[in-house]
Length: 368
Image (cartoon, rainbow, N blue to C red; front, top):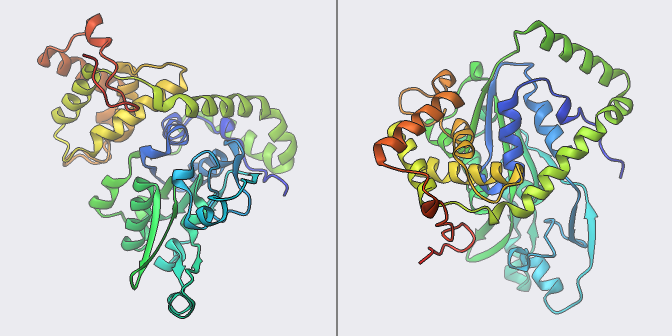
């Protein structure tokens, strides 16, 4: 199959916060997705499609309808277990999937369906995969997510958070892996999501059209060049695309080993608490985002900068009464707030405390 030609991710002009949110989710899909809000013509869908094309090919179990990872048998679908548990493993390489979810999608179309009649008559489980199966280990894109049925949005967010899709009907169940980068885009002028649903997106970004004349000229030039000669334009940006793709691959390999200290946890908790954010989801999202950012920079330990840059994406839609007021949540202001919180809590950067890094996502153990 010929590789799709899409506008290169690295050729998108400015919109650095949006690009960072997408890249960090690509490094660590367990972050939980990103909601991009903005007016028409601000490269929202272009960025989502470009991200998928940027990601490396994946190795899957041969014949798997769920893109099952040969290296992770604990995450295989029921079908894959039945086929490979007692036989040799065959693999194949596929492009990272990019699945475009239509606004009209129903629950059955999203999660898949079980043939109850066949199960009762023959005792065989027959499952017809849905969109979540196709999106596993790829990017699931929902344009105009605010127009999607709330129940379907709930299903998507549940699957993104759990990493597995379980379908149960009449006492019969089927499960398969469902790990994907969830990207939702919307124009707030056309209505908003319920606050409960907005909060379940890990990151959010509010973007606007660029005002700088040089930026606008660059957008015109690059778009025209791409439309006239897509392959030539892709080749022009190929080195930069490859470099970023390699960075993401390396970061994926090391993200779960990125260490953090109790000081980092106290800093995150203090920052979130000082901004009157409800619940604890933001704390976890910031930690995962900070680990992903550290891995992207090639570091094996979280820093305050990682925390601030993750918080900039995790908090705009969660501050009570000030949702999406991005000017209040710039990285500079968050950095100052973090310094204040650390001072009030007496959190220092003492060597012995920073070395208390056995308490990691990988082990959960604290250094004695």
